[in-house]
Image (cartoon, rainbow, N blue to C red; front, side, top):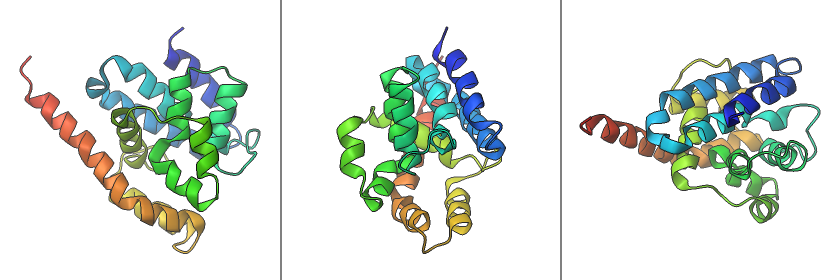
Length: 187
C-alpha cells in the first residue's frame, strides 16, 4: 500500500465526522499537492500524504497540547507508525515553528521532529496556503487574511500568521518559480 492509500482513510477517520470543514480543507490541500506533483518528483506521494494529514492534530481525539502540528505529528509517530518524513512534514507545515515559538513549544517541536527538505516544506506550505477552509483554491494573501479574520488580529493565531506572512509568501513564490522553470524545460 502506498503512502496516499494509507493516508486518506486515516485522515478521513480522524476529521470527516468531528470536523467536516477541516476534512474538506485537507482534501483540497491534497488536491493542490497533486497539481504540483511534477516538481515533487519521486516525493509526490509523500507530499500528497502529508497534505491530507497535515491538520489531523485538530481532531478532538488527538488534542493534547492544543498545537495541532505537534499533536498530529506525535500521533502519526507514536500511534499510526507513519513514515518519518510524513511525520516531519506534518510537524513543520506552514511555518509552524513560528506558532510553536509563540506557544512556548518551539524547542519541543524541533527537538522531537527534524525538518524535511526546504523544497518539500515549501511545497506543503504552498498547498496549504492556496486552499480555503472549504477546500477550494485561493491565493496566499487571501488565505492569510481569512485566517487573521477568523481568529482575530490580536489572537495568538492572528499574530502568528501576520508574523509568518513574509515567509509564507516567499515559500509560495519559490514553488511558483519551480513550477515555471519546470514548464520551460523541454520534454
